[in-house]
Image 1 (cartoon, rainbow, N blue to C red):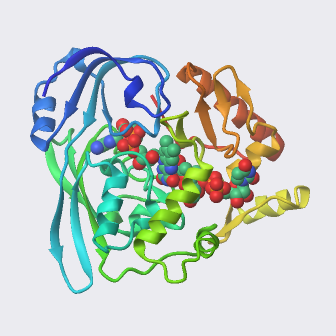
Image 2: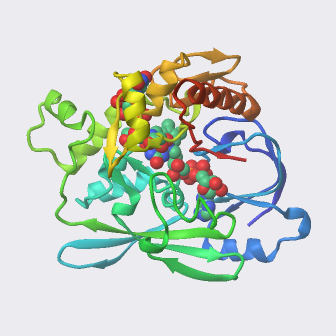
Length: 337
Ligand code: FAD
Ligand code: EPU
C-alpha cells in the first residue's frame, strides 16, 4: 500500500469531474485496509472510501485521503440443495459478479446486470433495477468498523435497507468500511420478467424460453438504449430518486395533472422523477457543460469540463422548479462530496 499525494480523481469518478485528492491510495486486501487505518496521521483526515466512483459528485478538491477499494476474489462458501452462497471481495466489479453468477447458472442478480461500480458498494444504496434489489439476494455484509476498531458481519435485517438506502448510506457512513458481501443465489432460478420492457424485448428477440444469460443480455440491451455510457458521457446514473408521495398528495396532483404516471407502493405512490423533470422543461437541456440527458431526464451529464459545482447548481435549479410546479421535493441519490 502506497500513499500518493495530489492525485487527480478524474479517472476515479464516472462524472469525470477533475478534482484532486490531497492523499490517495488503493487498498487491495483486508490487510491493506488495516495497515492504512493504522498508518493514519491527523493530516490524512478526513477519509473517503471509494469504489468505482459511479455514485459520487465531487464539488471540490478532497483535502484528506481518498482510499479506493480494489480487493478481489469470489469464493463459494457453501452449497445446499437450493442455494449457493458466494463471498465476494468488496473491490470486485459488480457486473463481473453478475456475469460470474449467470455463467454458473446461479439466479437472483441477472436483472442487476450492467450496474456500474463495486460489489462492496452494492449494499450502500441497495442497488436496484428491473424489479430486483440487492436485498433480495443479500445474505451478509462484512465490514471493518473503524470506530469500534473491529470486524463484524451484518445480516440484511440489520442493514435498514430500503429504496436506494441502507444503514451504510445513513448513520453508518464513514464508520463501516465494507470488506466483502455474501450473496445467496438460486440453483433453480426463478426469472423475474414482469418489469418494464423485459417481456416485450424477449418477444422481439424471438426468445420463448429465456435462460439466465438471455435475461442478462436483454437487460444490457434495454439499459444501453436508455442510459448514457459514462465512458462516453460523464454521469452517475439517476441523479435523483423517484419521489414517493402519500395517497392524498397523489389524489390532489392527479386531478391537476391527469397524465401523471405513477406506481402504487403499499398505499403510497412512486412518481417517475424523469416525468416531473421533463414536465418542467429540462429534458435534454444544456447549461454550459452541465446537462440533463436527452433520453432520461433523471440523469445529469457532464459534456466535458463541467465542475461538480455546475452539476450541483443545475440539480438545485431542477429541485426548485419541480417543487414549484408539483410541490414535490426531489431528493438526490448521488453522494455529494
Ligand atoms: P462509489 O461511487 O465509489 O461510492 C458510493 C458511496 O459509497 C460513497 O459514499 C462511498 O464513500 C461509499 N463507499 C464505496 N465503497 C465503500 C466501501 N467498500 N465501504 C464503505 N463505503 C463505501 N444504481 C442503482 O441502484 N441502479 C441502477 O440501475 C444504476 N444504474 C446506473 C447507471 C449508470 C450509467 C451509472 C453511472 C450509475 C448507476 N447506478 C445505479 C449508481 C451506481 O452504479 C451504484 O450506486 C453503485 O453501487 C455505486 O458503486 P461504486 O463502487 O461506483 O460506488
Ligand atoms: N419518463 C419520462 N420521460 C423520460 C423518461 C422516462 O416521463 O424521458 C418516465 C416514464 O413514465 C417512465 C418512467 O419515467 O415509465 C420510468 O423511467 P425508467 O424506466 O427509465 O426508470 P427510472 O424510474 O427513471 C429507475 C432507477 C434506475 C433503474 C431503472 C430500471 C431510480 C432513481 N432510478 O429509473 O436506476 O436502472 O429504474 O429499474 O430509481 C440509478 O439508480 O442510478 C438508476 C439508473
